[in-house]
Image 1 (cartoon, rainbow, N blue to C red):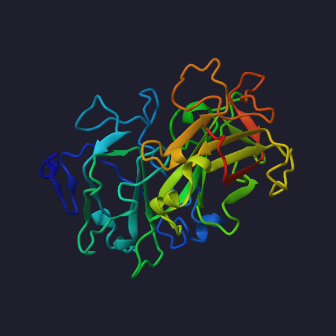
Image 2 (image 1 turned 180 degrees about the vertical axis):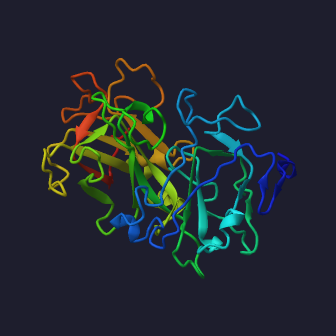
Image 3 (image 1 turned 180 degrees about the horizontal axis):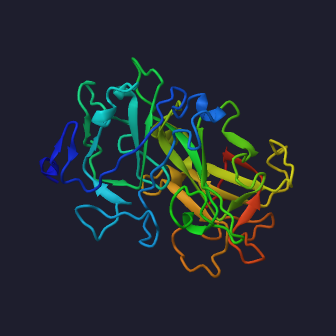
Length: 355
């Protein structure tokens, strides 16, 4: 509670911080999250959009981290009262404008959910003349489950940084957001000994097609098939979108509006798009927006299984995905993955049957 006891100073850091991290970020001017380079792959494998999951909650995971002030507690999910965030002094003379370095702080897994104040933190303070020392003015303690540092080359002169809301979809190859809890690569996480990296997509709530997003998931390591053991949906803040979370949630009938998703299997050579929502699908789910607009829910993680034989129940929900006949999806061979090639995610009005 005593912020002065943290022992922080500019160009130095903090002696008594609960967590300290260093991040290497790409300063390519196309590598902002909404830059052209992120579409072309010019920014490298992570497209300058790495999400630090803070090690997760499993002490057995390789990336698990404990607090410096309370070694018996994990960094993941901790409450914080302030953040000291700045460009390393050795990098200030490089080809980088420190005012463009941002930090996205999420209170949900994998950089999802609301940020403390619905916007990004700057590495420089409001006067652009000293490293930022950010104390959220949200009126309550804040939980942190993920961090995303990046360079934003977009010119926001005269305008506020991104504060819109989008729909985010995370896909993991195993139940309960996979183990280890990270966007891993080259670590076997499928029954056949192969691996699949966790993937994500973000869409703005206002789109030209009225809120429907569909295609094949081209980035799967097993293209065209995607192995999904669990999928998370939620609203994510500080996106370059037109509507804020509050504006969007206040504009809809939350009890009768759903976020709906269907997964399709189009075979070894799927088209870029399915022909319509009514194509034959493998599994579907409906989530009422009253949940996603609720600050106490924020996101839903749903397993692609019925929970049978699950040694780690209670993290992601079971039986939310249903087959065309309405029964919960399960894999007859006992593995937790559903393999699919295409998806449609959309907002549905007059939906009073969602979960």
